[in-house]
Image (cartoon, rainbow over all chains, first blue to last red; front, side, top):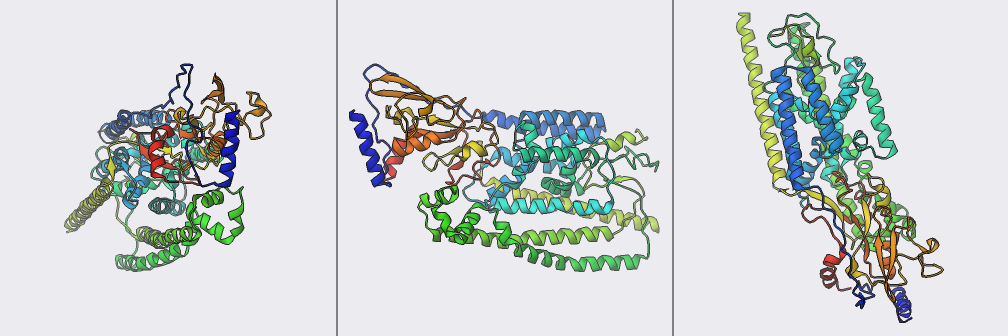
Length: 417
Length: 198
């Protein structure tokens, strides 16, 4: 009985003075019957050794894939390597850790002073880029589980019109810029949140994400590797590296005999056909100069547009969103159903603090908007420049930027040594 | 003549390629070095600080795993072993008994065991718990707060960004070193109490 009255007393005291917070309202009893208290279990996380094993596997699979692509020239080898990568990095590691997402860890490490970057994440970011700088996108060919799952369903690839490929090709730059912006402002990890395949790897996700993943695979039957070509932000970085790679995969092992057998073999539209410069050279150069001249203009327009977008862009930051909601609807502060508002009121922070914080983040988005927009302007300007430039080409060659080194074209080449 | 011109073009192209390769290599090295200043050899995992938690219930809904990898854990050192347990019983419970209608837990994941008069032990069946934090709210409001939530690392897939962390209204989720992956209350509540003169 004594205990119950104690409870009632302390409950009244609790109601009267809410902030008077004591951990031990009821001291632990001293047992007389020799009761042994159970231990609170603490299941350990995955051991560190296994995390470094993942890095080892990344290097090993990359080496094997590169060997199959560059040295052995075996499509079959690439295919089975990619199946292994899909099983290991996809279904066993459940899509996490991945190089694409590591972009955000590296960004956060640079911008957030409190964030500690696991060495494994840095290695996952750097290693594929370094290998690509030497041997082309062999990472895409057979190491990335997202690429592998799409590659396996590309049954009936159709050729997209060139203009559509160019336009859709801008999206990864936008995605990359936004992902970096949101990571740099510590808002969220966009790439991981909207990873369409991670739910499939885990056999568990929100319905919308599974739907998105299914949709990507369905589209992927006809448009080969839609995520890799038109969304993947890491693909942008790999594309840059691959463009200037030292030893990229070639369609033919020695010389091209212009047989055209490989012309339709690439499901990604990444084979460049022989072209001769057309028209007057002088006017071509002049046109190129005009496009070059317009690039600063593109950057300016892009930057301005990006900075004007900073208010809606910042809405995805939870602090900014909460501040906006509470400023617009002050009655929400009393709403106990509104979890965020309730938690904010409980936290003891003042409205001024919240608004100052939100304003600071918004100004980060303002300058970030300039950078994102300017970057996109540059990309558009350079895309147009590249479209208008002509380079004489006599052989069928892989487009080093967009070639995923899958090796399909090698099988079609009749020149065998 | 044309041979010479072509040769010149080819070597110019080669020069640009090499130059750009070096530029990219150096930029990558720069980014990697800037990031490497923050590097740690340890791995990092997600955990929630039970002292920041406001028991909103989102842990149950937003985890990528079904059911959630966040479970209620019991810090026995903090428990008062009360008969009238705010974490086990509904506020309007008819009787201090294990009858289903009296239990606060929607899945009956808390097992109540008689120890000695008038004390009861409360144990969590983690297979049934889905991290809704109803008991945590009850225990923290009316009791010692010995029931609290923790990310269970045998269940957590350690997403790059925890999807609960993104929506946690109290910012209770943080990345912690994998070598010290729990923030179980009993372990450090003494220190926290002293530093928190409430």
